[in-house]
Amino acid sequence: MKCVILAAGQGKRMSIRGEIKPLVPLLGVPLIERVIRSVKDLVDEIYVVTGYKEERVKEFLTALSKRENIKISTISNPDWNKENGFSVLKAKDIIKEPFLLVMGDHLFDSTIIKDLLNTKIKEDEVILAVDTFLENPHVNLEDVTKVKIDKEGYILNIGKKIKEYNCYDTGIFLCTPKIFWAIEESIKRHNDYTLSGGIKILSEKRLARSFDIKKRFWIDVDDPWAYKKAENAILDQIKNKASDGPVSRYLNRSISIKISKSLANYPLTPTQISVFSFFLSILSFLCFFYGTSYFWLLFGGILAQFSSIIDGCDGEIARLKFLKSDFGGWFDAVLDRYADGIILFGLSWYGYKTLNDPFLFFIGFWAIAGSYALSYTADKYDSLMIKKLKKGKYVRIGRDLRMFLVFLLCLLNKVKIGLIFIALIMNLETFRRVWVFYKDEKRG
Image 1 (cartoon, rainbow, N blue to C red):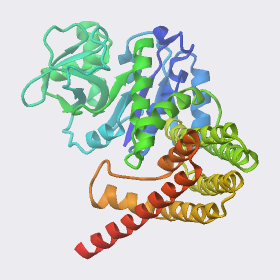
Image 2: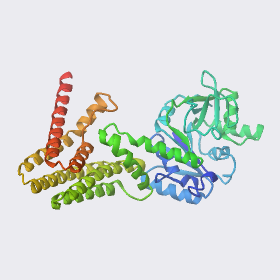
Image 3: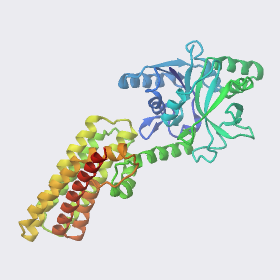
Image 4: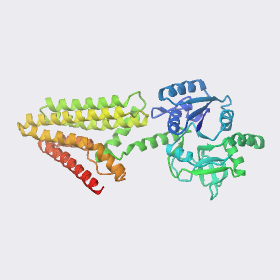
């Protein structure tokens, strides 16, 4: 199926963020790219209707097409300063079958597109994805297009100024070429050049139907207020991972998200952030290995905890900027294992020097062994909890807790007791996971 994206307008209200609205970066990624990435895996071809400063937009889309191997074509609309119906009509000579139509400044959950495309559409019909959640905090009531539908879901009225409505227009349409006729008819009858005008014409013939998105995320990024809302919504989406441990969920994420929000505006890769986190771990080790006073112990503990926080930023940036890769995730895990080993060894060495107790090496060995065993079982444990046991959140002890315990033992100046506690926690949790796997297998 083909997809048409309307991105011809100037967007004066967004000029504070950038001169060309489709290219305005949101958390480091241009708006038009975020829209394209939301539909690219669900359609065969993408057509972007361009207008204002279109050469710049076309240049960006050409580069994106080559970089991500996405089939993107452009359709020029010299009447970009007119209503959006003009942009839709520019695709009339190209689109001859049902197609997806979305706005270049609307962000949305891609599952909306997936479910909409699985909806059967009748000949000459148009289906509009609507939001029946009237209390949606992402909606600007003064600017949103409102929709009135009947009990069967057919559209009765649509417009920004209608008084009676029961849902909102999300800007996501599953169309047949009949939409072109409807817009032309709207122009002829009412001198109405808007897409909504075309929908009104179709509604008269009961050819305009609705599809409820059921409270899923969408937002029209049309002004600075909506921009901030969109920014916060995207950050909220990456805050909570099912595999996050308690320290990550309740402490680290609240800090790392703020850092990632700033880092997203720079050309940093997740791998570079992983390396920086590892560098902090090395500094922590050096504080323990060469330090002989409480100052260096505490400073090393702070560095260890900070490295754990930064370690969350690489994944956040990967998700924010669509930079996730199998190598990146694997490389980060490798660096984490090295970091765990050197930090715990450094603590053991510090304890041996300051307490003159060789037993610290024995404790340190089991702390490191337990940490590695726990990390080794992590993927299988996460898979079992999320997929087989069908739980969104579950008990998970991992690196976040380990580094936080390192910080606490340094803060309290209790190296020996702290290492014993870490060794016990890491190994007991590993044995618990083995028992969980065993019981699950026995249940069949």
